[in-house]
Image 1 (cartoon, helix red, strand yellow):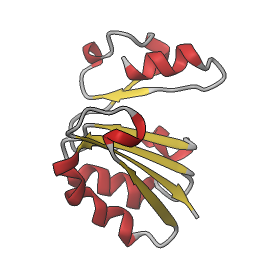
Image 2 (cartoon, one colour; image 1 turned 30 degrees about the vertical axis):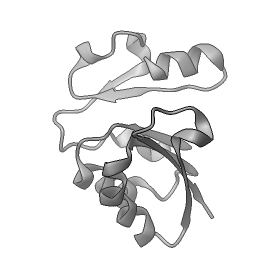
Image 3 (spheres, helix red, strand yellow; image 1 turned 45 degrees about the vertical axis):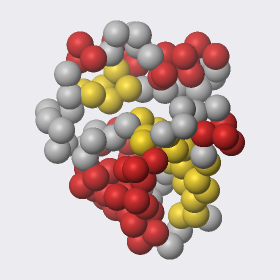
Length: 123
């Protein structure tokens, strides 16, 4: 639903959703959805994207693969998830010397008290 809301509020931005199961895309049109063959698979189209949005990712290893295998051309990454999960993901971005990140708490941007938003940008 988040991808659909972003597309609706800013039609010039082309946000695609990537899922394993096509039926997960209840709010995005078919042309704005991409599927991968499993939770371990990368979406090759991500290599051409200017920005990525990870919302409640479940696999640290998968995010790490995206960042290290396809992350050379991405300019911005947004990570949104539980505060308690961020320490597992933070080392992924610290390894890349070409990224800088800022962590935003719920007080900064209207999230639930247990959530964290991190904006990672290419330096």
